[in-house]
Image 1: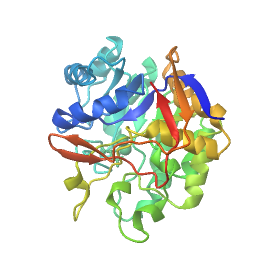
Image 2: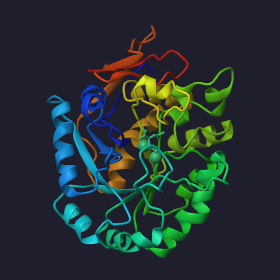
Image 3: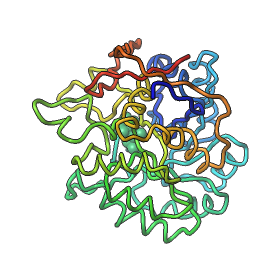
Image 4: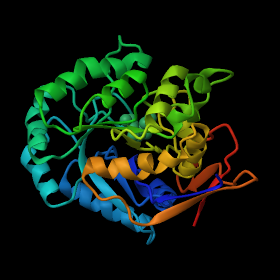
Amino acid sequence: MTRIVLRRPDDWHLHLRDGAVLTAVTPESARDFARAIIMPNLVPPIVTAADAEAYRARIVAAAEGADFTPLMTLYLTETTDPAAIAAAHEAGLIAAVKLYPAGATTNSASGVRDLDKVRGVLERMADIGLPLCVHGEVTDAEVDIFDREAVFIDRVLDPLRRATPGLRVVMEHLTTEEGVAYAREGGADLGATITTHHLIINRNHILAGGIRPHYYCLPVAKRERHRLALRAAATSGHRAFFLGTDSAPHVDPLKEAACGCAGVFSATNTLSCLAHVFEEENALDRLETFAAINGPAFYGLAPNEDRIELEKTAEPIDYPTKIETDDGPVTVFDPGFPLHWRVRR
Ligand SMILES: NC(=O)N[C@@H](CC(=O)O)C(=O)O
Ligand SMILES: [Zn+2]
Ligand SMILES: [Zn+2]
């Protein structure tokens, strides 16, 4: 197959940052994606409806007239007011609330330490059907970093879901076969995003033959068997699994450092990478389900009506290795192989 047409995809987990980086990276997503769930982990975080409304306006301005709808989220803190969340949802301002366990990832210091403090918010969200997006890693220093997702499911996520029946939850950026298994059996109230890069790299890519900071993200890429489980899930067509790129720009000096930031920036070439992966898995016919159907279905939205075309070219496609911003360059995800699928615009 050398050409496929699919509904325009959406990105159900995206970081756009603010300021110069926002200006530079937003067009990279707006070009290919119709909608994106915008992560609220700015410094300071997006915690109020007013924050979300102002941030949305900055994103729309940065999209420079592209047909791109940012779907806003609020950052859950231990002082979040259930009534304020419900009002923001009622006003159509937010599509989800994001739970960061405090200290789990980039800009999560304002996150939740004690889940008992947010019970009221979660119950209200269950009542009104507002999804909770979860960064699913425990933060305990004694838990090995490669086990933090699996341990989170047992210790935190499963008890939380049992305590709050009806709460709609998205397990963000799955990285393990345990996560895949839990999401697959979780019923209609549970969804899971899978990133582009976790379908392509395993932990060797980060560490073998030299340390590669641009492959470092959280949750960290795991063993090969986990990558294969993610591929099977993404290409299965199962309604629980949908695309969330977790494209997370950091300028190069913050990545190429003694203590580098977590995050992979993949907005620029994500669809080309995905077409490559789905072709390898003989599943090009399921790419639309993963990138354009299952996500909106989970969020209760219609899929996009317009279409994009992906075309396979004999020569590898060209794409920039870095996106320049006024704060410095941001390195684009290198899948480690030439890409031949091009989005026709
Ligand atoms: N994924 C990452 O490694 N980083 C994200 C935060 C997150 O999604 O956990 C970021 O904001 O940079
Ligand atoms: Zn995260
Ligand atoms: Zn993220």
